Image 1 (cartoon, rainbow, N blue to C red):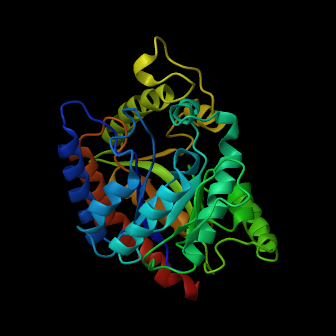
Image 2: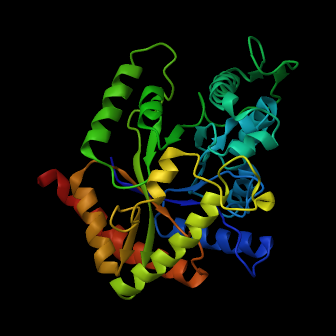
Length: 356
């Protein structure tokens, strides 16, 4: 199974740029990524916050679908409790058709308490709502009928979709961050730093058990993607790249922290405490030493990813790019360096692998 590459992005608000300028800049960036051999674009979902200038993934990805031809379009994740089941079903099936079947689905409950409060339900209900909506969505995708039968949270008239989605039984599913959820669900899995042998073994164990159980999800995915997602910066020297990476990560970290807690960012009078243990643990570590960031010259970044390919633990490398206050020029230099210097070297490892 060939290693693939993807980009992950929040589409953060940038000072001095209008929303239209941000959208056009990002679409041009992603067209270059597609031309350079990237498999997919992963788009985060957040609302009412500078972390996201593209809160409605279906709208942005529909625009991107018209500008690309091969790039997989993957909301990562669709925060299911923030959507009405009928609306999310219709929007995603439309996107599946508009993209000619290039849609894949990252799914989850969302990690920000005040976002749930914005949409009118207690954060404590998020996990139960997410599980219920996902089951409803997958059934609807297979049958064409969205129903609230036996729902604890919704009561609506049955909807019959008047057109056919492209993919059957439904688009491949992804889970980010939680190996237990990903493995038990049989989903493609994303981890936000270097994948360990122990974590890969745990995923494989859980997925094998899941495939023997009724109701297994992703039955049409024989070889799941095991992805590690890291911020990446390439510059002329290691020192320059590290300086850019630390500066951009600091800006990203402050923006990320302001979306936690139960008070909307524009009403905050002080920095909120981290309410998510995983985010808190991640952001308290040195980002380069912990490999949340991969920063350096083309040669250093190439050597890191070649070594990762040789390890054979992850088969999918996601670049968080851009992030924080990275400039367009810094992001472009990184993308071009990765396309020209890293991807070909990883492909050489793959060619050599059978004879090793």
